[in-house]
Image 1 (cartoon, helix red, strand yellow):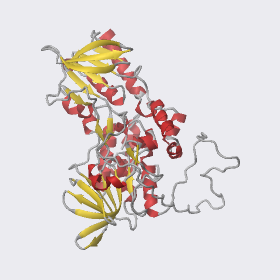
Image 2: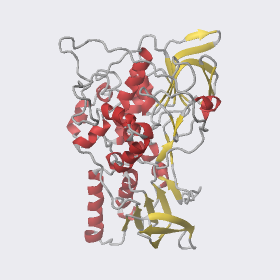
Image 3: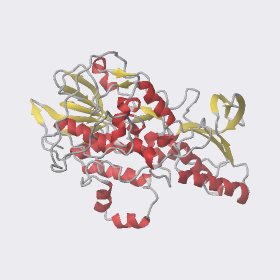
Length: 480
């Protein structure tokens, strides 16, 4: 564990992390070995996990392997994906395999490797509460420590609509439990509700099983007008650059809300390869294998009622399509309806001191929460500001950059030197010079320290248990 100061019998750290998913794991990796940056990161689970219940065979990432924990901020860092492959002696094999995309299980194993490699990661210790009395006082399941700063990265939790009836018998469950609960579906009528990548992967898995393990029928239900692909085109991917994240944060709340709704397919669309495999399986079942009624597709359909059926049909779903209703009878329902930000009840002792913006804690340009405490103590918030930072906030794309910005804030420096987008996101004043341009005669001139953001008075005290964003999303599968 990183060296820490000791006051009496109490340990004190420069930074304490709460939660060990990709977001805080990225920060811990970049912070590792930094002089004067004592740190520890707590995870309540006994061992590392990342969407383990959705590690469906054949599933892959929707982002480049370079969008790992550290590479886009520190390409030489020992916690990179390439370093992982090299350390295990299989980097040449990986190259020769020529994967179209990184297998998701492989990336999950990489994240676990990084967590094991870092001695500042502590599993099996839950943070129970956080208070402040001149320093942050963090009470865990084993004791109390103090810290100058906090980094919260508690991730997301499954979201299921209120009409669902999740039960203990496995007849309805969230897709996050798919691997365990969808093992024995032979001869059953199964419905997958949700038109994002998670729903697509679950549907593909169900219709790709050996003949004696196939369900009787598999229905795929989505509110979207069709089964729509991920927009992975070059200019759309500029939404996932640091400069756009900063631009997005400068927009008015209504403009941000509208953008997130309009561009959701840049983050939550279905990979083209997945769609192609589904279409090919549908072709084979209908025209070659002699199973024309195995697959039922219901886009543009909203599940409005989930009622108990009779003895021969456990569930009767009412679907609404263009104001017309029809019914689908199912034995099992898989809810691929996305995720929402996890609860942060440990903040309850200080939540009245934290400013809100809508359903989120309000953050500044360094992802520090606005609060009424001293400006030299920060609460950094990762993967919980979609309304303020856009679709990229829950995505792996800006993971390393966000962590680097937090670390820069702690160190009082600025290390960002990347060029701006080709796209002019906003109108610049006449004669303005690009912010990323530097004097070519002095290419390594140090950047000015990032000033602390002024404390904004608390305008609204909202319980940490209240609702999070109204639109659940599927992109946390690729995110932090």
